[in-house]
Picture 1 (cartoon, rainbow over the protein chains, first blue to last red):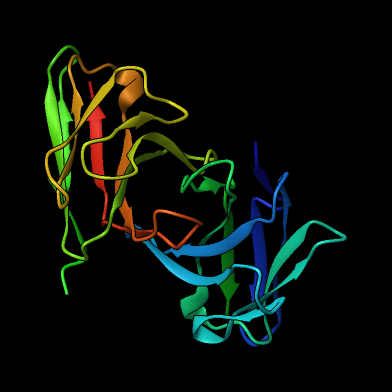
Picture 2 (picture 1 turned 60 degrees about the vertical axis):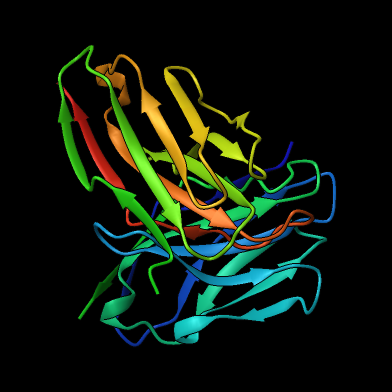
Length: 114
Length: 114
């Protein structure tokens, strides 16, 4: 069965500094990987997805993630944080063993200070 | 675009009461899901429906039942609510039968069982 580990429960950055949210996955097959964002009291919005095309994936709002098979990682980055980026971020994995089921990490809360 | 619509948005139940959470999508998606979100645990799959007429258990199905009423609608029923079912519930849908595609989420139902 596939699984995903988000290495930090909270990450704090200052506005204008880089963001790094770490995610490691486990999968017996070629995985599909996603990052979702959840703003307070809101639903989940897809930031970006990897489905075996380019290993560097660009998403919305300046975020990107790199699929590294050798490290089983899919870290989310952004060059310069904005106050509006403060939210909870979920790394998600799926593979053909799960037939459409998305397996979520426990989430990383990003705090952005002025 | 409505996307995925859940009702109600908030609900308070007494222990032992029953209720049904409604979900409808207007994207002609085959697959639909119910997740629950609890602090520090990410989203956990309760039940899913890969296509109209089929339903399957997810990670945490105990205490719940589902009905895929038609292609658009997927309801979640709590027959006898317990305090452990206090959570935020999300309905989601996705398009593809094969391979993983992203899921689209509703705004959530915040349920409190007292």
